[in-house]
Amino acid sequence: MTILVTGGAGYIGSHTCLALLEQGYDVVAVDNFCNSSPESLRRVEELTGKKVPLYELDVRDEAALKAVFARHDISCVIHFAGLKAVGESVQLPLNYYENNLLSTMTLLRVMDGAGVKNIIFSSSATVYSTENTMPLTETGRLGCSNPYGWTKFMCEEIITDWVKAKADWSAVLLRYFNPVGAHPSGRMGEAPNGIPNNLMPFITQTACGVRKELVIFGDDYPTPDGTCVRDYIHVMDLAEGHVAAIEYAAKHKGTEVFNLGTGTGYSVLDMVKAFEEVNHLSLPHRIGPRRAGDIAQCYANPSKSRELLHWTAKRTLKDMCADAWHWQQQNPRGYDA
Image (cartoon, rainbow, N blue to C red):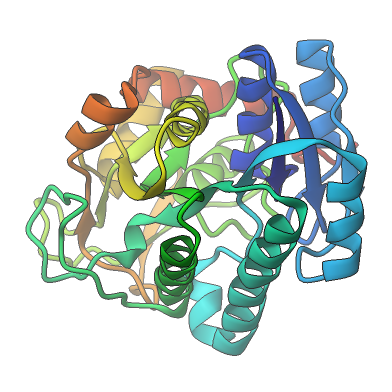
């Protein structure tokens, strides 16, 4: 079975490509490299000994996307491609709405024309309203605090409505929480362009001297230590969740939603302390102002994924910190030579 992975060279996309190949799937990837590197998939090939056809294109380019479907016998699509920085989405909302919504609609049209009827969508816990109590369940109230989250919410609605109109389609919407860590080989990991938007690469870049200090965005949130609380999940656990979703989609029609998280919330200061303890080092850090779009706490109830996808996060906070640091030590400038 051949799986098309949009955004396949990205952080989660590349690790998912690796997990798919390890489970015997064939993989085709497309990416425009706006926040990724083709080197990530070269390393996927190195680690698995298998080839990954890679096409440089924007998913909004309908003609280019049709050509990929024409060349390969694709059975399912995992859709990662999209802009993804919460803070940036607040500053550039139109860019986010245009890119993330149009790419999803174009993909659905091209899939329909090619007779491909299974899609796994990379959604986010940002679709949940801040008025929910923790932990979050899939039936929680929806409503977003930033444009990035609204694009995920709207894409979920677009896919759901499309599948309602197509009785023989299957869609799995994966709302995942905060991916961290790296492949244990140290050959693959998170490599953001410019200043990181996520906590762990900021921590690891500070630890190796690329950054002078870690800035913690706010310490006056209504949490135990005043810093934001999140559900951090190892990227390989997340990748394996997508493999489980493909297996589920192959057996079920209609649309289903799943949380992918650990069920445990850690604060920013918890993560700093854990990273220091696991890797035996000290991180220079300071408290800065709150970041636009951030919420106080967010963590999952993953029981539905455990029951229906037969998936659960297996890797620990220690694994996340150790693997992230192993990657950064070997690749202080990410995938750049």
